[in-house]
Amino acid sequence: MAVRRVSLRSGFRVGTSLSVLALLAACSEPLDLDMRGLINGGFNTADAARAATAPRPQPDDRGVISYPNYQVAVARRGDTLAQLAARVGLPADELARYNGVQTGDPLRAGEIIALPRRVAEPSPETGAISTGPIRPASEIDITTLAGDAIDRSAPTPATERPTPQTGSEPIRHQVKRGETAFTISRLYNVSVRSLAEWNGLDSSFTLREGQYLLIPVVTAAVSTQEDTTRLPGTGSPTPEPPSASQPLPEETPAAAATTTATAAAPIANLGKQTGASASNAAMSFPVQGSIIREYAKGRNDGIDIGASVGTTVKAAASGQVAAITRNTDGINILVIRHPDNLLSVYTHVDNITVAKGDAVSRGQSIAKVADFEPSRVHFEVRKGFDSVDPMGYLR
Image (tube, rainbow, N blue to C red):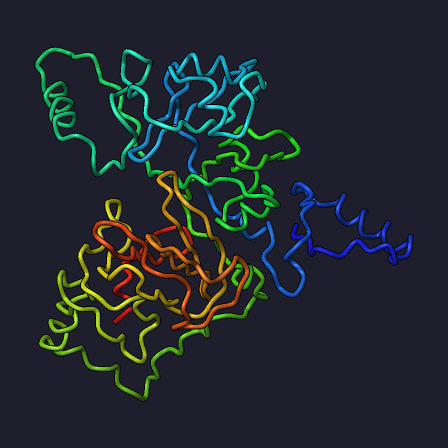
């Protein structure tokens, strides 16, 4: 059950306090001790719990899970950081500094330790099913698929090859001061239990500042509280049946049907100047410039807009700053939450002028284009957790 946060002030009467505690004790979900942010219509953990997530991939014998952009190691029961470091082949002090722990600190079974640089890729020699990082199923090496097909068509039974692990690369979140497992689960719309399972958290969901977490990959859309609390019989009206006294509508002419079927969806035009967005567009371009890389789901989950270093970056739509962080390459990431479960993401920016929790309006200055080669803004739109083509919101 969802729990509204209350301010536990000393002025509460004893009876009221006992009532609150009784209510919390009756809930089946873990108690969210971080009660900030839910007053005045904030998010609750129950909404996040509705997102179904995939299981965490299996590591190799060293404990390594490898993705295209980073690697992590999974601790065994009884491990210290030094023991894990020796197993993956990295200096213990380097691994300790990167994860904000000491070399002799004990680790929980299943705890995630981020690797500061890549080690040898998982392979059959290290106990993995296949060689290389985990990739989406659509990117499996064609030679692997062809080899499987040859084996299956052989006249004599062949040893069946195990299917390589595939999957989406999860977001890797570094814990900031004041964050809890509950605030992080709400930020990414995943349940706190799945966050704990993916990262080997203890029963109290304890986090440390500087710790890296893998955000579970969502496999189903999150239902909103509004959708789940409708009274029976409410919602969409029942269609009125055709009247016997009125003829049915004529079929759509073939020409019109053809026109509808062939209408092109908005796409990015490489090299074209972005220009001003239409007045009725859901979002506006964060900068004006040439589109130098278009959206390709799974390969480029946004568009890249070329712009000079120092160009003002603007909010694409009104909303609230949900996160400001940076990836392992030191690139700033700014996320704004909008109505209808939409997020806009801005990277390759610096001189950020807003803070987490700030309300921003469409067109408001939020940052500057950072000094990268080529200089650009990478802009994404996400519906819940899934990336969508930004051009559908910008035209």
